[in-house]
Image (cartoon, rainbow, N blue to C red; front, side, top):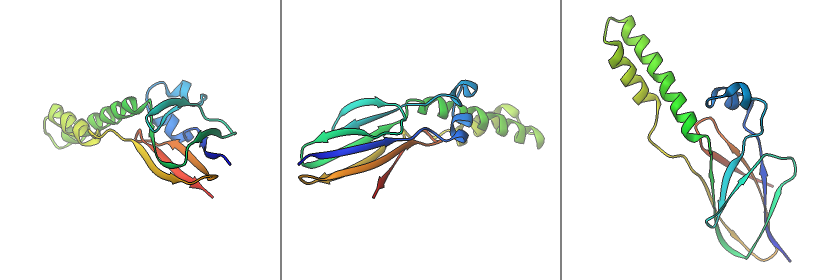
Amino acid sequence: MKTQVQLYVKNETLWTRFFGGGLWFINIFRKLPIDIAIDGNKQRYKPQDEPYVIDLEPGIHIIEGRDPRALTKKADKALTGAIMGSAAMGAVGGSMALGALLGADGAASNVSRIGMAQVELKEGDILKISCQADRKGGVVFKAIP
């Protein structure tokens, strides 16, 4: 019997593709890939209807997901925060440069977002996982029954 992980890679939502990074006018029509590493073996997967099937040995496995566009999404959040902070400080008569600095710092987080799952598979187990990049640059894993 085979022990498998079936990865159902979903495309980002329309909202995330539109507001989640530069080149939105191209990205809304593309299938955006994500990077998934199983036990340190990293590969890039594009969204598709059929699952990616990975044969594994029984035991404990670590699955990590990274969004290749995470830095672009973070930079766009910082730019939006700078514009909003500058406008807010300018509206109350303060320094617009200070408002931009505070807004950018508050909007951008210095956290690298990694989706992670640790699973223990027994002989003959078939694990189905749905994975999708989110708006913040992370990858969300959901088990499919």
